Length: 332
Image 1 (cartoon, rainbow, N blue to C red):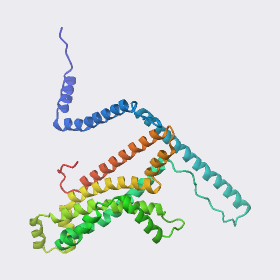
Image 2: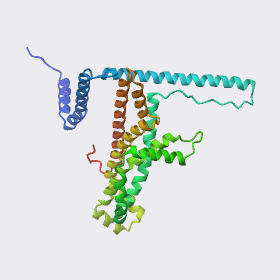
Image 3: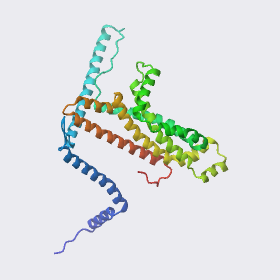
Image 4: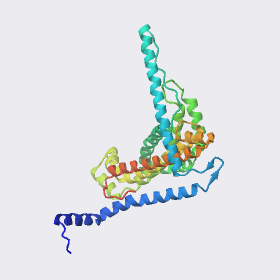
């Protein structure tokens, strides 16, 4: 018995098979499937080991328990948002009623003072780390360019860089807290001292990779490019813009990616120790709480911290690919 298949169907299926055998397609499938295999193995191992670990608060939570607590944290956030909306609605209604009886009333709406939720603390941590990282970048890149172009300046500042680079954020935190308290008067409507302490700690601890990589990238410019700049008689600013920065961009972004990862780690530690608002404080509060749900909530926070760190690194990688002049360069 012979089976006849439509010619168009046969051609379509053969085209699909050829597409699947394409090297770029296979590479993309590997890039997608291999990380999924690693994540699956991690969650399976976590599930198997968690039930065997017993702590003073009960069994160590597995992936299912952590997922349930994450859902509870989302429900708590939504409930808190509803309470906040109802709070402002009540105030608005009372204010309108008061103005009907007394048009000259100077009563104002008071800000909501409810407890911060898990997701609001995520937003606080992200804002703090981005401000600290931006400050570190604005300081490190110009300083790295200037130092990298001058061997004498490098000889002057390199000992200071090597001296301050390994200092732990735990050592900087008390000094920064004292300086901010002494130099920054707390005013209504201004930036809080806790925010400044966290941002300055992040900036001070995360600027070194960007600074060092910028110095190295600037100092390794090709002599041919230097000669081109001399032949064209470029001014110092034009030399920096057209020769130095394009050549040093790969090293600069490598330093920035390292700095952003360090900034995120430093921030969590600073929030935990100084009790500044954010994810670090959430983890510490749950540890101090010691309830049966604390371990699951801490694990949920740890996973969120890791995911945010990964996303920040990928975003920085995308920015590097967009800015980098060599579009064929392999970036990981």
